[in-house]
Length: 383
Image (tube, rainbow, N blue to C red):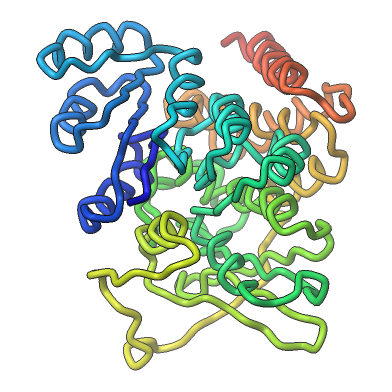
């Protein structure tokens, strides 16, 4: 029985993780769940999965949930202190972190310090703190198991292969809803347009990031830390069918890829049961149904999120944090209709130009760089 603490239980990854648990009740147990403020949904999860520990990041929501589940005897934790406590519980052996944003960094570090394996679906953890996370995981002999479909595909393709024989990582991207469009066509695209992802069912933030290729840039930075490769050895390939989830090219020219239908339950289950594979009652990939698989170079002149991500990663230090924070702020404004689509790139570029890089930042410096970015953009745009 693998015992899990799930951070971000009400989001897209969180709810699909609970589907995996439902399908494996004798082998997976959720001992703790944490969410932000969705009280009604968390109450349903508590009553179904009966976790021993619950945390709401929003303190008002925590009080409301405490009243609603008072009959269960569960004490609801709250805030960052609650997240740090719930990832430390002795019963858990794995923490699946699916929260969105920088709040995932400190709980991930705490979980590693407590010897928990990490099933990672929080991009910011490695984008902003990979230089802290990966050495700590090695020191504590903790596994970092990727949940993102692309990184899971790379992880699976590397299984059993010597890492020093890797020549190139081929990181696939669907291209999102705007694939093939030019800059002038993007000028008047709305949030509703950007949220129409052709293949994947994701939350609004990740879906917008997919449309701008910012998401792929974040995944490049993750891959650098997860697999110990240089940025120059990560090639983004646009693959609109989302069947080849990513691949690895080796020094002898062989390419090993992982293929499957676009479904996040497979990488989630693979991370939770690794190194084992378990049966899944999901749709299978039928090669006879595929008309063709196509691959394209990304248009980084139009979709500048990918280029800006590479730039921030090459600068290093605190700059990836600034890239991420500026994008978060820009996407929130775009979803509200306050800015045009292409202004997402402008806000990222302005924040990066303004920032003075901090080398090898600790967690305090990472969070300070995030706040500095918010303050700078807030003042500039009167937010």
